[in-house]
Image (cartoon, rainbow, N blue to C red):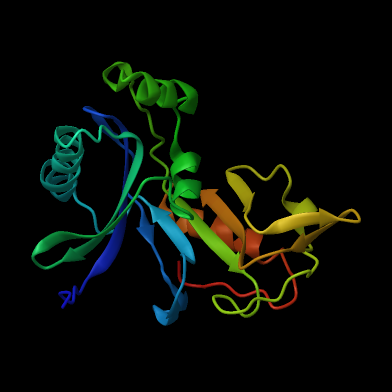
Length: 233
């Protein structure tokens, strides 16, 4: 029987060239559908970077006790791993515990990671592919980032699709704001919903409160029938 782990989740993503590892910034995901972590589990209703429950010591512990042994273990088995490794962790009273691994970027974690990445991504990916990640230097902005997911009615169950998304033109050119399209399509000149998690409204700010305010100000300008989102990211 699996152990029950009590705590808060953290998404920890790294680049690996098979032997060397470069960590990305930590991200805290909000999995539950409703405010206050209520309702069913989802693929993620919003993220914050950096994670609010990650200290420098815990970051080092995750690298030394989880990430590096995983990469070295894969290499020792002849399974040299080059790519993005995403560890889903639970921060328990006994320390970080692994919930899952993914061999990919995370969604909606990547939205806030990209919002804070100053470095050019292409040389990083080339270093991963060439096995030369040691030559790569990563730079990040100091400003925190937040992503609020706008989901379709019925999500995470059977979703309503084909609903027109209104308000996007008003957000064009707004500084420190990016609206990522996840489940939309362009039909007859209109943006419509085609899946569960429709948009990821992502903002940065001088501090977390400013980023939150900017993101939710943008959310207030977007509308589609059945739209649901968390108000406490």
